[in-house]
Length: 325
Image 1 (cartoon, one colour):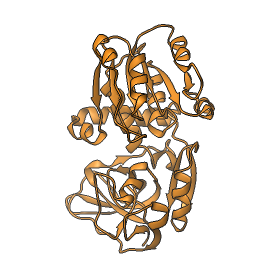
Image 2: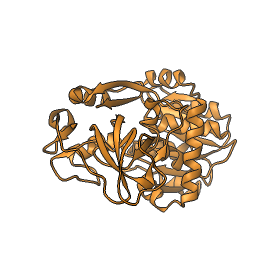
Image 3: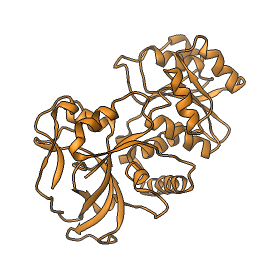
């Protein structure tokens, strides 16, 4: 089968090539899936670089999420049928014509959801909806987040709106405001604009901000903390700068604020099955209704893996870059 392979760790555009691999065989309680589309996530690229928590044995096929049709059933599999369209995430080797997935983790895809949306249905959207649950906010509350024009940021804003939760969406480029507006996401503020904090306070009308999501680190952490209301929650979701969080002791003490880390894999592993099922159901409903939009930047053949990676790393892209075997 054709696949996107790397024989060494390094910059993805340099080490990933299209090549031939053996068609995998499903083991007990596994299925083989014929890939329709598979997204390029940031964590996929970190894995290729060798800098992620999971380090595959080389040579390795990239990718961790896809939509496809069930092609073969392993021993003991029940409730799945050949030809059924399903989405799978937290798997390996999806940048190929076929891949293996645990039968228990499959999400059947309704006809109302497109292949383009189904391909990216689980990893980022599920992280976003799990994060929203983690914040413990309710309808009418305010949340502020930075890097709001990233995949998780956009999704969080749309999911929050569907629940009646207000968001202030910070971006680092003025053009980012228009990118969010094109998706119907309001309350976007560019931190490249002088006095942006005043814009935030004007948007909330002085209402307390209950929670903040920091995906940058460094001084951005302190900026979010300064805008939090009393007893607010600051969550570290990522570190785009690679710098330690800078936190004001005064804000932390006098606001009685709480700082927590959020790692999606750990939260998902500890989540009760009933809660996970409820959240997946909410995602499916919102995507099918159009309330949650999962846009794409483009679709690339596996043979153009280097071009696809470069497109995925381009700032200001419209959405996910997808690979098609």
